[in-house]
Image (cartoon, rainbow, N blue to C red; front, side, top):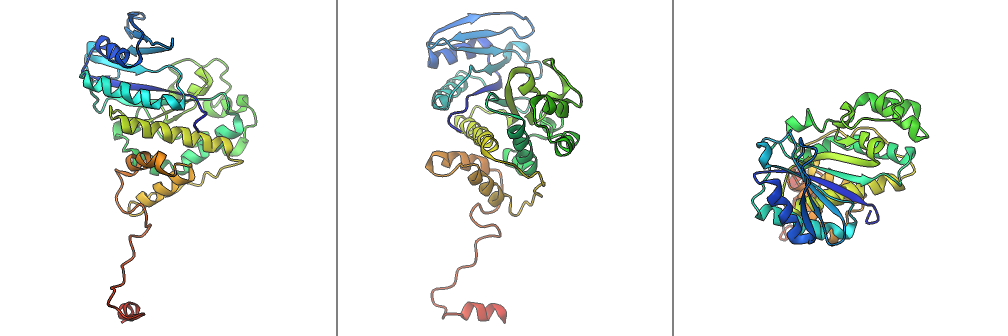
Length: 308
């Protein structure tokens, strides 16, 4: 997972694009430019000390007035850039930007290494765990119904039936017809797992994150999508049988899912913490911690008492 390239879009309100751009510059160096066109986005650009371009633009879907809409669009990033990205998030928050329920985060993973088989694996893995993912991320209901809908059942049905072997066949399954030149604002883009982005710009887009300027949460989200993408790449096949959501065992179920993705050990401790924090129950015990035997009990005494 740490060899996959990614990008991120972070939507904010409460501060001007100029101020947000200068906050980014305070971390990455370089220069700030007001591009200004197209006017609907009125973008500002930061060319950092490494020559990479960070954009800050307006987004009409945000609740603030246009002057106080600031969507941060990163350049192509690598795993080792996550720490610097976290510093950018902290600087932007310190500059006065904030988020509300209209804001979201979109993570993009480079699709260059994906073929029809690995994309199909990803769709099936995501669909199987979708209910758990939605609850673990606490996706706002209005976002679930508009900008990051669940996987289209008819798309999954076409995948299962046609078993696409080429990207052209996968394209037909996604759109329902062959779409060789997808348009930017195609209606199919508003899915939590957005494959329109793969055909339009060459990235797999995950649109399932609520807006935040918490640097630890953003790191967790990036690690999650990279691990999920890597799982799909290395799997020979995947099962799409949907996992039923059980509130009583959800925390345990999500933890098992995260461990299966490779999010194991101290490096991913905070990722597991943030991705489990909204769920009730025990992460270690599926049906709750077993009652401990009293040290004063004689061997077998507790069992006998329970049976009685």
